[in-house]
Length: 113
Image 1 (cartoon, one colour):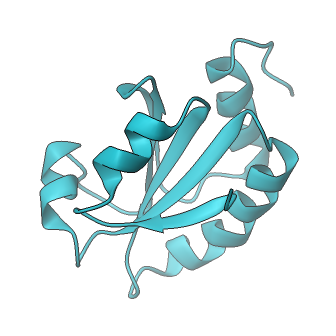
Image 2 (tube, rainbow, N blue to C red):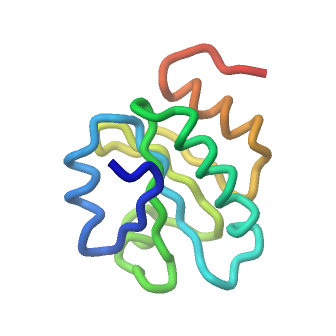
């Protein structure tokens, strides 16, 4: 399975339905500088949490339906999904330490400092 997968309006529902792990759905755009900063962090976290976290990336400009569906207003936004439900979100290019803490909390573990 691809640890960092591109999705779009057509594929998102199928991918969410088929995923048992916690999902980090990143809303990004080509023009978004902070998104470019966040991408390698998400790739590292996807590898580190393999089997427990699946990272999906969606181009917001190309996929307005999903942007509207998740009420995304700025980028980057990461929506955490468990069993298809929006359980948490992070807005902006937050530090890796904070993302790791959010992931740990959403996995049911103790957030790391």
